[in-house]
Image 1 (cartoon, rainbow, N blue to C red):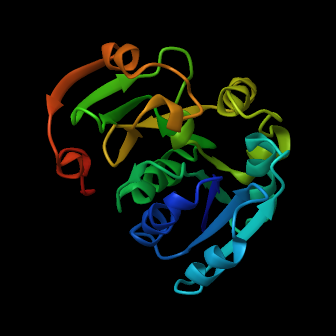
Image 2 (spheres, one colour):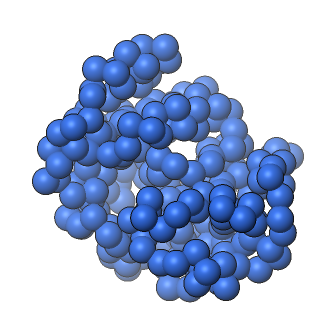
Length: 223
């Protein structure tokens, strides 16, 4: 019923990619992993994937953009609803069920989060950040496959989610869920495609607190 698509060029995120998928409290799901890079060892990823059901791993050359990798992943999916998962963030077990409630109750085409929890690993600060321009945060995009028939991710490595959303909102209504059950994990800027300083990003956050346990503060069961 839902296809999770994750593109990555970082072997170090393997455990996180599979953990985010397997812990989703949703029975009918599949994971499409697209390795973006010639140096990625697809056999290691496929060996790991054998431990789980409904997981497929593919590989595209380094010259392919992130947008192209996402588009490729969607074409390999089997279910009607697509969820774009980033490789280095936290998606709680209730992330998919929370969004699926909106899809079912509102007959939504696109669902995501306008406000997102953001965790700065270096100083262990957790805050909430509101999207200033985009209707929802890129790592929280979920959509029906019919949207993809009209709008694809642009062929770029930075801002592919922005391009997708700007075109999609012209034709489809976007619904949002509350900030809970997802955390944007921020390490050093060099580890992210979004090259903004942590100091600047922190200024955009409110309700900042220091904690070494962001999971308990951001995970919210349904009901």
